Length: 513
Image (tube, rainbow, N blue to C red; front, top):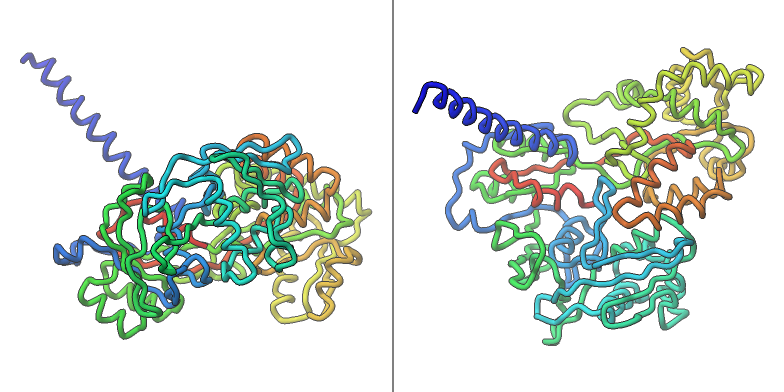
């Protein structure tokens, strides 16, 4: 081999090595920023597990399911279990990426009020094929008046669903089986909520007389001992993700039990709700600790009488980082996270926050136009007459004074705040603390309040563009209409044993609402 050939091979080897290392680093960065902020990195070399321990994955939490129907219970652990066992027609991630799961295709009509859904050729864990009739039976079962399914409200965009859920009708009028593999959904209006109505977990009653419901997901229920332990085992008939663990164990995590499990390396993932728990897992030294977001967020909203110029100036000029520094005083332990988009707390490209940041240079000229439009009048900020409300008011003053804008407070008591908001009179904008309303529902209300004539057209266009791009389309449209300005969200902590860094598997935990 010549010297030149040797050098060529040398550089080829190191070029390949560099690419591999870069891919690993980039993957790590993506995981840390996209799937939740990694605030403490554990040391995997501290972990010493037996071979038996490596075969199972143990999840600790405080609200284990009490029945054999976890998807009908509202606790976080129950809903997490459900996500491993049951699959929906369509999934929507925390980043608001909609993907078909059991649906082969989802085609919306031109007006966005009808969707024809064709389902895939898959089977339940007992080998029974998935059909359009079993999908409809799942919608019937989980939305029945006696069902405890906690997300019934998300299904009410389907025509006749409210009547069915309350028992005044025996059938869901807007759900029709067309053939063995096709269903038709009819909705109240063109709305982003039409997509969330397709996220119901598809369950099937067991034929053996047990109360356990069957699913098509990567795991199936082996046993549930109410409030103590639940065990899932791999579903051999699943065609989904190939996860590395044969068994998933969900255990009730008291502080005392956690201490023993941590000492014995027996707890792989834990949801942490208190600072004491955070410190307990941090001190163990071998857990990666993430912040994960909730699904709702706080935001700046506008009066129905506000002009588009006012909304645009406020959205472009508002400094999310300043608000964060002034009022949240972040530390590594804070559970607050900044909000990326209007369609979701962790929305990525395109996202409202990035679009506004790119337009920040135009804030000065916008506020000059606004001063002229308002003839120098101050912006009226509606807030509750409390200490917290006065802090928000002071923050708004500081945010907009550099642009020559005066902000005056409109203080109201808690009893009259909602009525004043609905009236749209006497104020220009307000800060709404985080509640329980979903972004999809929030956007519906904002479109109706601020641009009711454009709502149906904008939503129908987004839906017709395809299920995978619908959230991107609505994000851009809502941002360009300046319907609201998202601020931040409060979530929780997730501790993950450092020997588990499989990205796809961990998404299951971080993307749970």
